[in-house]
Image (cartoon, rainbow, N blue to C red; front, side, top):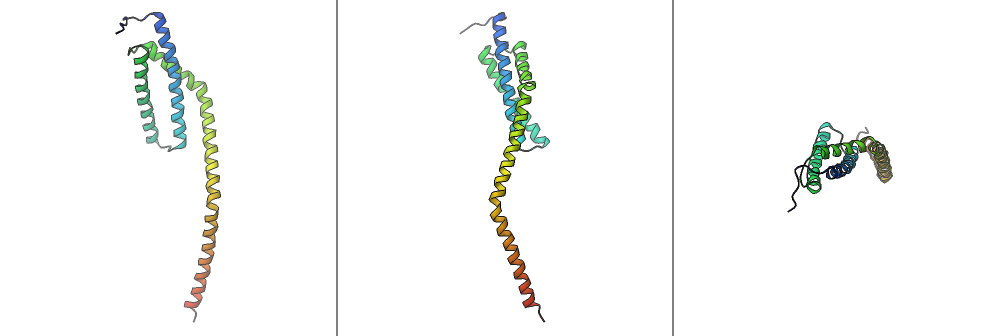
Length: 149
């Protein structure tokens, strides 16, 4: 069993801070994945709330395991600060680019899906138009037969 001193050395603190910074950056990427799912699916307030709660629960569990692995379970303020700082750096730098790219991609995918659905539904729409014409013609014919004096 490895004994951990009460106060870690400056090198250990720096190592934990840098690892936490990188881990916070990775949590920012995870947040972007949640944002893409949010763009693809429902847009209601309750869905947004549920997704945010699920994201924070995932971050909590992942952070617990991260600090368990990196600093033997010790939660230090510089570790949490590094994690938050890494998340903020990602969110305000690459996160904005990723959001624009994901919005563009989601729009392109939706347009492509709508085009494919339109092409697939074309024969059914033609068949429905023919059926309506046939039905209208039959109705006129039977009106003439049934209601002629």
